[in-house]
Amino acid sequence: MSVIHFHAATTSTPEQFIAGLTDFGPGRSKIFKNSADAYLTVHNKGRHHADVTEGSGGIWERLDYDWSDLNHVKLTTTGSNVFAGASGYTYTLTPQPDGTTDVDVVIVREGKNFKGRVLSGVLGTIGKRSLGKAFSNSVRAIEARSAPNAAGGSAAAS
Image (tube, rainbow, N blue to C red; front, side, top):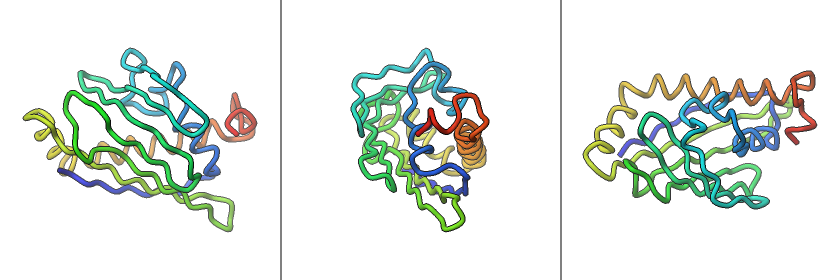
């Protein structure tokens, strides 16, 4: 099992960040590179909850998204072809006095089969840099879509 932690500061508000995180429309891969449209299935989406299958490159997982607390967003893996157990993501969003938001994410990867155990090990070691880059790119993409002059701007993301 691998537990991976990343941190970033963003000009997005927690609400704007959650809006980007929970936008399951076409083009999701522009924000989250490992979420290809061909894998994306929204099974159920409510006001503060979603049941979504997403993935790419032959790896998929079904995630239970819970954003009922604007400071803590929990994505729990409920099914996958490679991950199980405690797998998932926990985002902690902390608004700062200067208007920025600190974003912390803890990613847990527990393999359910040989491929998953190998992948979990790789992601926790040499793959951590790639995951970190993907996280930073996602934060910046959400920030860009939340900017007042961006197409879809902050009014659409609120």
